[in-house]
Amino acid sequence: MTRKTYITVGIVGLLTTNLLSAVMAQPYHWIQHFSSVMPPPASGPSMVYDQARQVSVLFGGAAGDGFTTFGDTWGWDGTTWTLLQPADPQGSTAPKPRASHAMVYDDNRAVIVLFAGAGVGGHFTDTWEWDGSSWKMVHPGGAGAPPARDQHAMAYDSFRQRTVLFGGGTGGGPGLGDTWEWDGNQWLQRSSVGPVARSMHSMAYDPVRQTSVLFGGTTGSQILGDTWEWDGTAWNERQVTGPSNRRGAPMAFDTVRQTIVLFGGNDIPGGNFGTMFNDTWDWNGTT
Image 1 (cartoon, one colour):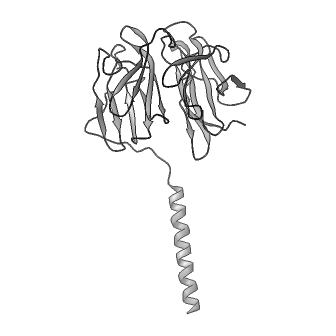
Image 2 (cartoon, one colour; image 1 turned 90 degrees about the vertical axis):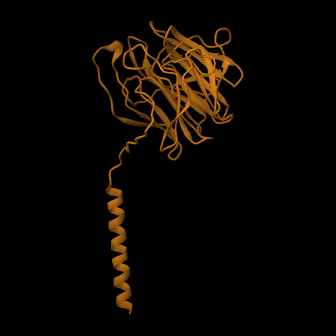
Image 3 (cartoon, one colour; image 1 turned 135 degrees about the vertical axis):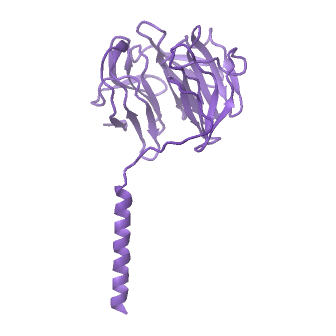
């Protein structure tokens, strides 16, 4: 009896070890999903995850012709794309069609905040919020709002309950270097001292260290690779070794490992030849 029991346990242990080894040996991979209805092909849209309604929300983007911009709102629930709201070219019930805008999710008020972007006629300076069923213009732009721009970056500071905005482009020149915060009622310019003016930079919020982290971007003539942190009062540059100079690299906070993850980007200034990156970096605030 003892011998049989020993052999059984040994076989089960061997099978379990082999099964775990097989599972761990499986490469990670992307899974392509197909939907009978889906958004049109586009570059420069924005998409964020709506935690309250458990859906990824996508808005806008530009067609490949270089002229057409989109203004429809789509939701992805993990299985199906759904048109949540058609485009409104007049901008009365939804933001006008645009691309290179910025969106963040405000988890305190359970809304998605959208600001600026570029479309037919130039750059926008309006602010909109999506509550899961409809868009509402919460600031028309102009006085009391950040200047018009595109290719800017925003992050939501969940500790201070503010949307943080930095920089962006205006269609020419070195770009903008201003810092603004949206508290759900008004825009407040917080600082004009900090990172140099830039566009196509990356931003993400670190809730553990309660800072908004900025990396890279371009001045128009120079590709940048500096790292900055905004603590709600001032910008602080972190003198660290990290990713090479680049623009257009997406960043996100990993809540499990408590680090900010950066991927890709490019160092192609003004349409000239350069490098497209596919490297991955972590920022933990210390090394």
